[in-house]
Image 1 (cartoon, rainbow, N blue to C red):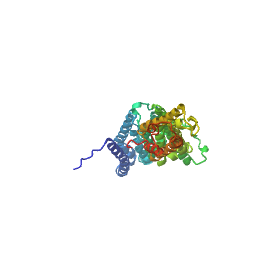
Image 2: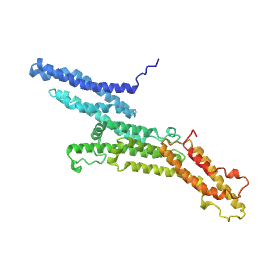
Image 3: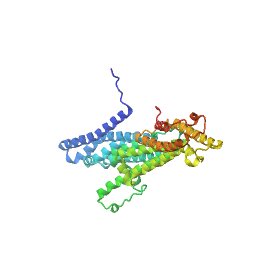
Image 4: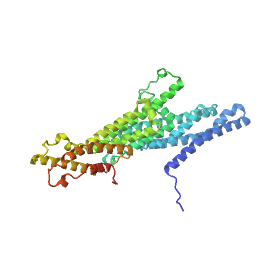
Length: 404
């Protein structure tokens, strides 16, 4: 017998939101029916006042429940639980969609009655706008704590949370744009408010303005995230691990943008965002590759002694060759041991880095090995010529793989 799965907190919250949305629609339908019935039995000059009185309890109940949801969202903001605030988005979207019907059914009522819905909508918009702004600040100011950093340099929780939040916003673009507009009115984001600047009709302008407002907000989040990630990368003592961390995070952001409509929204503000992130990834790859200079530099041509083939090697020349082999072996073993436990989850990026390292390292080692493996510089050949070229390639192939 299977255990009964108890509904989680999120399921209960979704159910509550869904129930409230249905309550809004039900109120409108019932109020319309009530008014039709009232017209048949109440004298005309008493109809509006009677209707106003009849719907007060139901309307107040609806508003109180709405404000309770807003209060829950405000408490979530105080806890820095910004995803919980997204619960008001579908409600606000529904309230705006039904506002015209609401206004029609309440058109004969007192001003105080008519104003109840606009007050709730404003309250929700302000709460949502506050959440959006504070979320942007939280991404910027998330502390750099060593205990909170992934030891293998993989994607940080801050990155996945930020992207998830932005993806969830996609379902409520108009609602989110209205929230941002209520807060900033274009001032913070340097967006022209003059419709003439767009050369389009007012409705097209409003749509374009909303898209640009949301695009600027998304770019602000991504900009804050990028700055914070650079700061976090400095927590790593090993600069190469910091580069792997940034490469993983930038790659995750790029792939997430490309999989959703986010890339088009970012492109409204920032030209060729995919090219920008690919540039960031390439830059971190170069920084990572510098860690292998300790392996390749000792065996480059410029660091090798010159001697005539066939002549007996001097002690100094033999020692120089020994030192170069030893430096290569030690560096190779150290980096393979350390970097084996690092992670690059994206298979394409992982293979790309391994391929590049095999070309760089084995290319240099092959030339060095061919030149000195047959030179009589030591009696303990196995001590210095520890690896064949193929073995070096196999070792590099096991980078970023703890199971290897």
